[in-house]
Image (cartoon, rainbow, N blue to C red; front, side):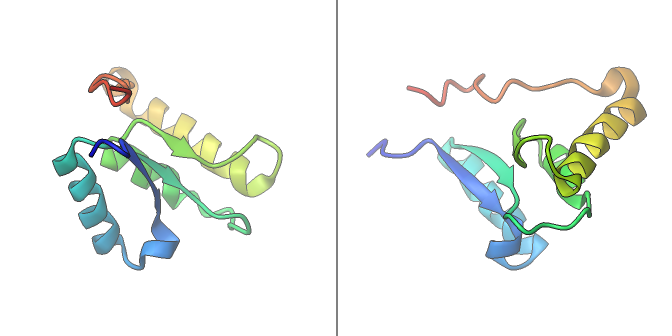
Length: 100
């Protein structure tokens, strides 16, 4: 009991987007947080940034700003923020007090 409080969600390991969304729903149902992540060897496809924002988890794990495939994801996050304007509100992932 209470041995975990969050899950690292790797879309490419789960299988499909639908299965990934189902995994995120399970996290929410259990009161867990989740972090959207990619694997090394990623491409410059920035879908992961859009997916992370759409799922509302508040966290993305994509590595340091040192390689083009990572920078593409961070740049997309900045673009999303600009597109959303004042509606772009960061929701603190710790608001549910996952550390208890």
